[in-house]
Length: 180
Image (tube, rainbow, N blue to C red; front, top):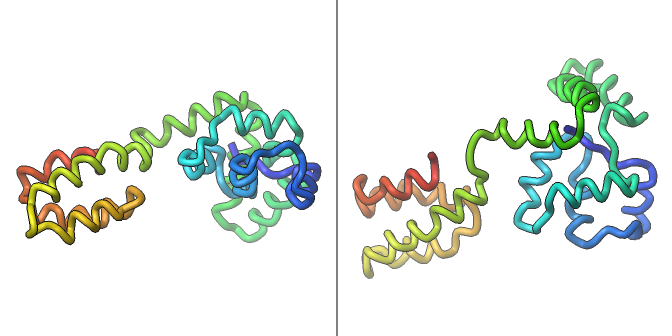
């Protein structure tokens, strides 16, 4: 489901009031009518934003579904006029507003069909450090690079170097943790 800020939400953001915690405010900013709720939750998962936080912002009247807002209709019309992929997003949002909010969020979570990048990182990081630490001085720089990797994409970028250093047999565990 695609959510947008209401007029009250925009005023609360501008005036820095409205009962938003700093982490909720960070997530609130991401609701721009382009990102789905699932995308925002995935982007803010490290901050601890949950579905309950989103529900609280909706209950406070700070967010609303894209299709029910006047701004949402304008975005949909503009997207249709441009012939862009945003028209599809706007149509999906209009269709999603007819279902319950929880069901829509559950559908978005299932569509990801697997673990989040954050979970993949949490699973793969200990394996990567174990493999590179086992290389001794030969893998010292690679081990430092792994320890400096702060995200799934950083760790995935190091995967070919780790494979080359430890071999395919040992790398299989890390490959599974990162990409399966």
